[in-house]
Length: 535
Image (cartoon, rainbow, N blue to C red; front, side):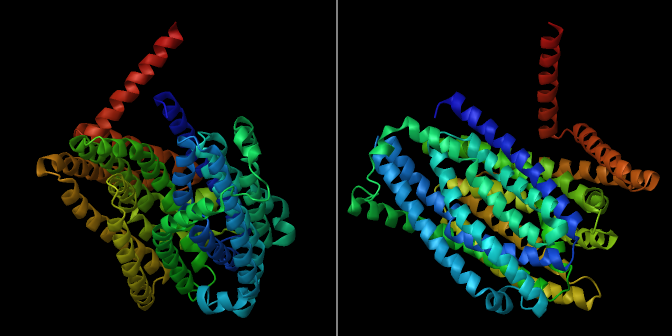
């Protein structure tokens, strides 16, 4: 890909990530307002957990990471006919497999939920969740095809439609809840998921038609014998399966962890499952904006540096990205800890989402926020290992982290209950502690694997210390402003902005390198814009 094309594609991905986060926030505001953090939303979250598990394992990132290299390899080597034959064969296999799995899960919905996913739910709650699950299983089949289509389009340098698809998914859910919520209850959210999945697929079809129209080899594929060469295609499908297995294992471990938390939360009252899911989603908002955007832009660059043998440049790039993440994640953590409750009230407290719902979500968010920095840094460190073509260590760390998370979830939820606290806070704290353990082990291994020297690490230590100092000043400013202005909607916005300004000013005073560079860059860009306007 040419540099201009890469820059354009990166901009599309970054803009779509922001749009997806905004529509996702809008989706959550509408759902929470309509149903509150109670039994209805907990049923929806439990059903969603099952469908998300199936999609992630069978047709999500695991399939894309295995299919795209083989498909793109055919295109790069001018074997377009074989590429399209493989895409068609893979789509048919995925579609057929997901239909079988969806029907099976639909038939076994009640025992699956009662014995594995939410055994703590009442029989009425199990029945409601099973009904939702049967509706939402349709979306799993649609997503299987749509997810594969994203890989096909991206391999053909068509990024806009795949980038917009997640936002259309969120819009579909919002439409379902807004139009049908009053009449159908929580089932409207389930229907919205199916509508959203359909929009996720539909928005990509015009782009697929354009790509196919450019490539005349697609029309030459025999519609009956889709493989053209059965032996060759079978070998490709087996290669995809082999590549999928390690990724499936890693994703499966993560999903099992979520299933265990869902299982435990089902015993903790009607609010628990909804509260931890809303809180976790809120924690992921800054994680996505900070870490995922930086990691997405970083990965191609450091992969190329490793391929060229530029190990010093690789180490420097990784540290630069880590410092940039730290300087944003540390104040974001302080912001969530001190302003979490008023922010939740500002965003969600309307309709059935009352003050009690705000209190429950804020309690869980407090403990999830403690792991925000670890979640952000993990994204960068994992990309470092992937660039070094070392997928084994992140998988081992992930497996260990899941085991620790599950053990701590049992232990801490019980201890929280004994202390008279909301037990689901223990689930959130377990997640944060386990993530910190994973990041620590990954960091130690990466320092050794990449050959870092202490002198190279000093700048990161300095960034951490100055960021913490500025964040402490920010915390004092937030507390004083809250005492003076209260916690109303306007006050929450004003206080949050004030906290960000205080952090930036103090970071400049203590000579935080990353803040200084960002300020210099912003000043230069503003001056350039002003010059152009004056002309």
